[in-house]
Length: 318
Image (cartoon, rainbow, N blue to C red; front, top):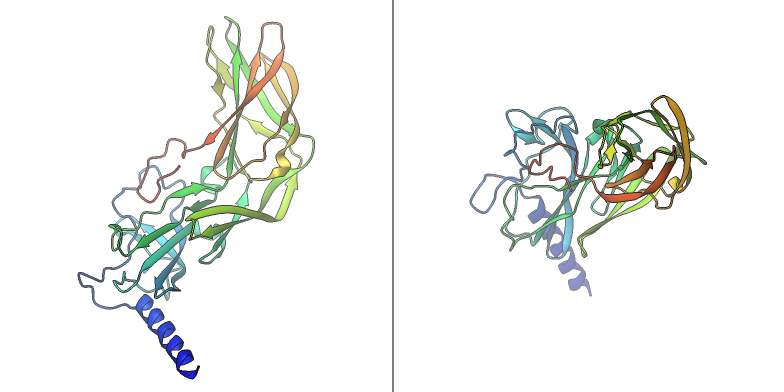
């Protein structure tokens, strides 16, 4: 029994040493780097840094090698975790051929990551109309030693943690119409900030949103920019000012749309019957008819893909 215990300790120590090994670069030992191939054009408004967790698995033992490292974007160096603000004490890490697997996941921007571990991520969330104030999480990124990606650049796939809310309007008339003073008012409070947890399952290679805690709520209307609908337009036109909301089930219920059509006040009530989920876009569609009826006609739901931002390697928005 004593020999078995001693052998177990040796295996654990060997695995930890293998995962933490650093030193001179060789063909079988390359530094862990994040994408520097993109110019980051169009992405700087989203985030300039992220916080990453990396684990190395060897002999069935998983060891943290980047325990919430801050990674900064530098115009000359690209993504770096050994220089710039907040990188003090962080060491250059290396791939190791004795490891069976590396696991990576991250949250962005780094100041919105309030908790990170191998199995989870907690993000500080807020409702906002500014993309740079949104929060993002990455999909799980496991790399087996037998994978072609082992030893290569780590490209993390980030997704928005906020839900995107917008309105679209269709005017069934030959006349041009101006829609202004658009607002949505809830019948009960909705979340405007909170801490959203995500759980990482490395066996299924999946991530699942968890509980929303430390919630602050509001009953204030959501304001949207006006739209002009051209004459004889059969297309629905969305506002240019979507909201990026805290995902929450308390958004369900009756809301009231208020607006002005060519200066005349119009209102209609409608029901939101789906909870807002991270990374999903909800477009609530309305029509205005010649007999002055404002009608809710349905909801379009899809993943939203980062507005007009470019794909950028590790910023492969989905």
